[in-house]
Length: 69
Image (cartoon, rainbow, N blue to C red; front, side):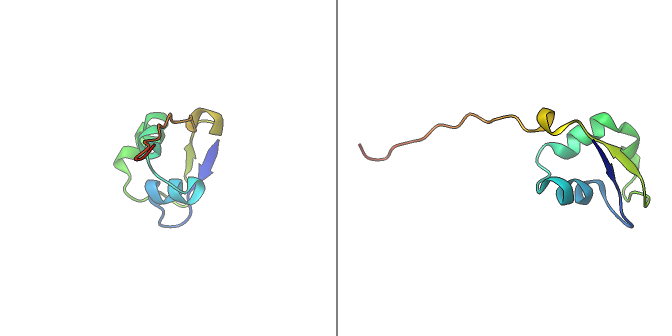
């Protein structure tokens, strides 16, 4: 998946606009695009490669605590 930066975008703002969160995604974006680590503000039209949605969203196991039986 390719994301395209708008004027004065930062990497985290671009990711938040697309996914609604940045948790773990900025790090993932930097793995795919190491050249962006030195760019505090992305150039307008800068393309950012991201993995497919299936590779990003993995189910998180949760457990429920019962306070009373």
